[in-house]
Image (cartoon, rainbow, N blue to C red; front, side, top):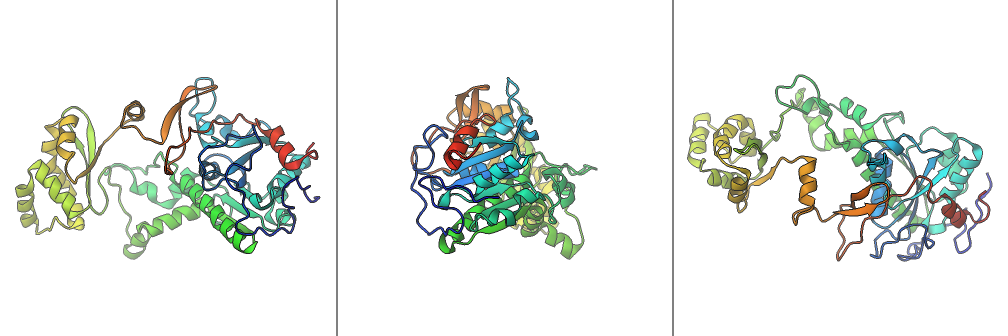
Length: 427
């Protein structure tokens, strides 16, 4: 493999040592017309990331970096990978899922099955001087994209790889979740089967860890000139998370499994309450103040005090509220069953009680058109979808935010990116 040709105005790749403070200021990187440029100065403006991945973990990591200002170039094989058409789909069959995870990125298509396309990808990864040399990928076990090979031409490379299992094997969120033990702690209390929840939590957490790994490695590179090769495994993310939250230490110390609790909250008081109009709400009292407020609003203080005496319990203690959750919920339920959502909202609105109605996605969408909708989600017109909901991401910067970026079409930026970063030598 030859050393990538230096692009006019860039720092030569091989052997370069980025110095802290050399990253260009916001607005200096993209060539006009190649990628949407936010008017707001974002923290990662000037950074260039090459993303080679599919499904959730790696694309969500790239998206997080893009939403904070980085220029993210997603590279796919010809025709795309399986997530190009993953459900849910828009009216014209275009994937809402793919569009959401790739908003604001540039899309490049290369023949990654052949040596020429593989060579071009390596050159893209190694290009860019102090602002480039960052690769996010979930490709594993391919010699043509090995860290050692890339590092020959980009010693300060930052390579963050997301894999499935701890030993680098394949896995997806739903298999990792099944193996983690969490599925047996999820679902109704009387359920006989494990439940894999709908949120791809391990994918999303792995993506967040991968994005953080990029930033940590970048900080070290700016200080020392050294690159890094970092690996994030979905299986490790699950094990680390469940250990941190006490799920696995509890099983280790007590040789017991946490049972499913339905909508009861483990270790404190939280319960689902049905209302007179068919709605259901979730109420939570984590602290003694919240608990006292709940009893005051519902007028159940005397009954609960009598119950505490009969059970020799202290309901100002989270543990006792949890242990006696069923009988406590039974005392509270008649007050809720006699009231509508509007009445409950008026009563709880000025209290310390934490609560929220159970809503469906269509309820959330309807509320987005009202004043109470999320400020980070907006409706915008987009080709192939019509009026579509999109987001600028959950991190809210001071001042007015820009409109969400548009999703690329597969391969839309291939020619412009290759011409810009590889010059005339990209055929």
